[in-house]
Amino acid sequence: MKKFMVNILFLSSMCFAQSSVEIHGTSTLHDWKMVSQAIDVGAFESEGGVISALDVGVQIETLKSGDPGLDKKAYEALKIDKSNVITFSLKEHNMENKTLRGVFKVLDMEREEILTPEVIEVDRVAGSFEVNMTDFGITPPSVMFGAIKSGDAVTVKYDIQK
Image 1 (cartoon, one colour):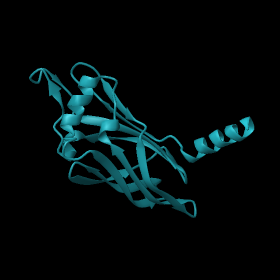
Image 2 (image 1 turned 180 degrees about the vertical axis):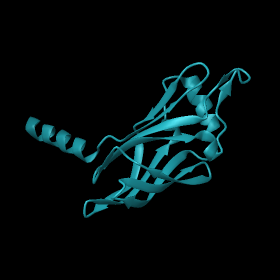
Image 3 (image 1 turned 60 degrees about the horizontal axis):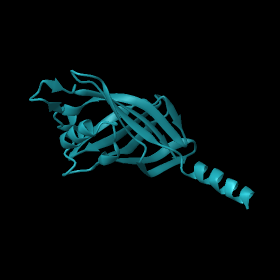
Image 4 (image 1 turned 30 degrees about the vertical axis):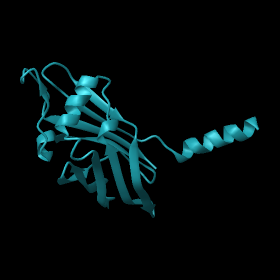
């Protein structure tokens, strides 16, 4: 029975790989980071060693910084009451340039981006990119009547696993 349970735990860890997204930013006070490991991988398919479908979603309230005040300000800036998910949908995988072209959706704004992942495998995509919050209609958060402000640019690190 013990051997059976060990095998089940091993197989379940293989079936449910751990994907993650981190958002790194700056402010006039200190740098900050929010992390989510609750990534909804709706589709991750490959044909002939090439990724053919990749649809990913992150529920905004799963992004956590460890500081409830920072989380609250971020959720307000992301208008969590109107839209609570950030999505990415693959449109094209370019094998020559090792790039992924897809559409990000934040709030009601869609923006096409070309990503150059550090890792592109049939079961894993990982890398990072920089984007401005204002590109998605998000006003960078501030507190104390603007005395402490978040920078507009954020770096998104992702590790999506099948």
